[in-house]
Image (cartoon, rainbow, N blue to C red; front, side):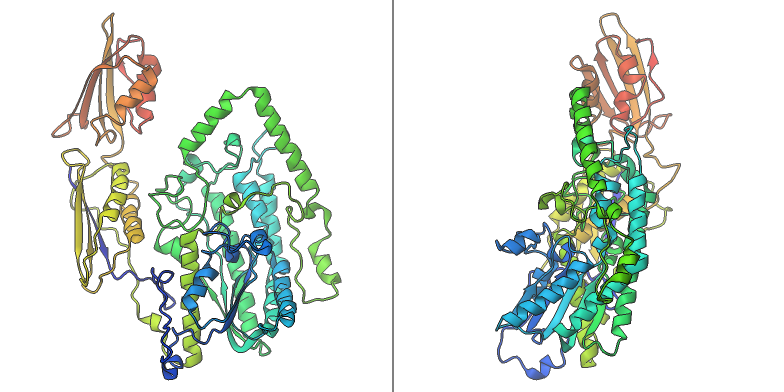
Length: 634
């Protein structure tokens, strides 16, 4: 049946509080280099950045950009702090243009609010010793607060590392304790710590300088339970199956911490902004709406394959390990190939390290942080969060692993874009002119009604066509309202046409948005239908002939596109080994009386029904179903 998928694209801009995303900002520097550029325009154009002579970035690993691009330089501090050259501040530095005379990059991976406060203090001392730097910064951007919630420890205990007790049972007590610790830190001193940083920054800023505080983005889609069952986040993979599953409830708890952190940050920023002694202007930038609401860029999207990169989630905004079931199965096979003694040795080594890690941690050796706060000589200085991993280096990892659960290159482009949009809005307010980004239209995703055509196709095959289609699009020059269309899997049950149609005012094409919108159509519309013709069903019968057995399998909802060559036949051979002969496969012009759409016939060795067909082993492995397998073959 011919399926027709149409995505109608408006101008590829997303408006959030009058801030727009420009997909090309990091590649095209629109700051003019023409020295005759008029001062009058500079005074009225909020998107001109010639006023940013000196600026800085402070913060944690989200600002250091761990893993995004290449290491910033071979300086010891840059290597130790995992600063990278495709981080959002690096992108911003290019965007701000040639007017910038000084850029100070202080952000450091792993830094908590205490450390970020010290970044500001060290910056002042350093500038006093340097003749070419001063304390009059025009612009500062930052991220801060996530590490005060013991983020790295939480990722280890709640997601990646084995969660086992002394009796080798899966145990979420440690994860729950860390979540409670994070909530405690959030409730009792995160807000004051943030305000300490922002107050310390006051002496560093130019009067009227601008500060953009970037919020955090929620990591996970909370839509379905698929991620818990089909993806494996365990690290190392040899211990797959011993980490906690990322259920919807656990993902929601972790996202709630992000939402709570952002709320604390916003409250602190609002209070600092209202303080008359603060000489600069500050606003938050919420880039998290982009991966969550605009491009399906979170982990655990319902259609995700678990691979990285993931063709089915091309707009993913975070680094992650490969988490597909295939990987888990491979590592489980490796695990099964090891002797029980070898497995026990690995687990005991992990438990011993794990025990030392927690016994030596600040969480169990330090005083109550509230008591520490009361006894400090400087009441304005931040309070250390007391995370288990503080000063414990047993689980130190290289950047290629440490980057997991941090923004990837797309994520940093998004952060930079939202930060620039926020900066332009603040500058427009200063100049008392209209924000130019307030004129953009919102993109809209819409599912069409269920009524209408009866055509259907296998979503896995549609998903494979999406990447081919979106890569094939050729945007015509200087044309609005154009259309692009392609047909796939001609003359099979899964024949389908994909098409995009731009509106009368739109001309630009964005491949990532094309893929995201198509996948939303395939996975997000008209679901949970008990009458869905793609609900797998089938029939199987095997007949014993003394020298061989003959089989007939019919089906619907699976093997709908390949004449069984890449699904059913390999699955049969995988169960039987050699011996499949007289293979024949045909599609019906219309379903038979039992709604089956195709039929396969073949011969096998005798006595294979029980181990391959009656138990549905073959058809289950390719997403199919039969009601057992009838006939007299044992």
